[in-house]
Length: 564
Image 1 (spheres, rainbow, N blue to C red):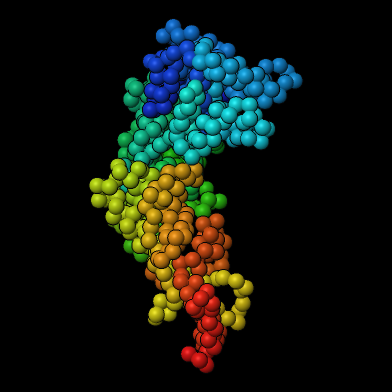
Image 2: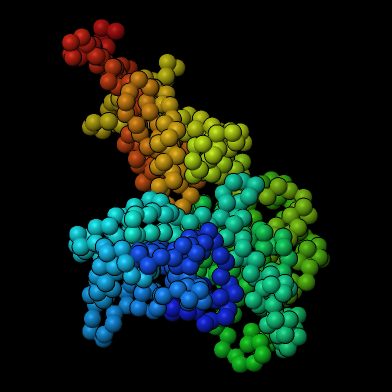
């Protein structure tokens, strides 16, 4: 349903399911204003860009339908839903797109004629205008598209550009995580609600399934009717986006949710009937990996992701939790009670039954687990990071009175400052730190006085808001007594490492190779020292070999260890 590779929609989407799954956003009002409410025959062009699956074509299709319903002079030739399309068999996309834009440019220049719309992938737009040189032919259009690389919306006199990639998909404030468009899409799968596009099929087919209550598809759908489950899924999806810096959009959310309810193993059942899944599974044991409690975490916790295991309660470990799980292993009847009506056969191995029961309780009734679950979602560091991310993604004036978010960003700043000071693992009592600068050697090390950096608030807000990597914030720091600024990119993975460094952990070579942000910090660590004034060179035994100090009249002084 939401799988990548779905075709681009037509000018009018006649697929009833897609239409019912659509969730309006503030961008709908923008296109409504452009094509209906504020419509004028001034030749203006609306450009909707973003990534595949952002909903560019769906948004433009709905706008076209509304314009027709309002009797506006817009026809299909004024709307280009697919910028990659060619008009003839052997024509390339750029020729057809140039022809479309040439007509629109003439109308815009004269400020006459019907308004037009274009949906184009941002990468394709950059290739067409920047790399192929069409920016010179359409400077006003390229100005608008180039501007929305780092912002949601941009307007010129005759071009209105919207980048759906900068649309806020979900809230990141800790107590509101997952709310917004993400939660509204998940709510479409409340099968027992008459408002769900799946309601009629769910009510009709659950009684016709030959496997009855043993059908994993209908079991999964019935469990998804629980609001606590949908709320938790929305939070987990948002958490995965932040922890794994994964880009989510409407298509990928639909793909995630549908694959949780109908996993690929069940999709491959080639059996005909009222319920192909029930017909295919009838009389056979239900595979544990096809049940909702397991599919949710197996879908979100890709072992190849850097945050693997951080979302799954079954990967959580503590003395108290381990003791409880061991007691479950010695009490099969207790596990059966905790599984409830889960159609899991008694012959399934004990570890799988315990893992499934733990995941179920976490999603449905966490209070019945008599030990703390410590996934990323429950981590205090995650709340700090989310609060700082939320704070920096807002304009400074809108959060200046929000004391809760201010406390979060202050805590993150202190952790970053402390971790930078302790990054090298070599801090003397008088605050000299080791930094890597110049020629590396195992025989000697460079030390200089730590210079505590102050944050550049405006620059931190601005760079975080322009960031296109999900779940990454920027703290722009200004070393004391300098005019230099050092932007520090912080992801949750890096923030976890920083909290450990703050507490005394010494990052090793493997840590420093894990991300570009870590390598950037390592390369610029010396800028948080007063190396311009003094550098000490010590040997393996921490005996000072010599010291380089700033002298008068733009000179330097070198003092040997014997002179000190």
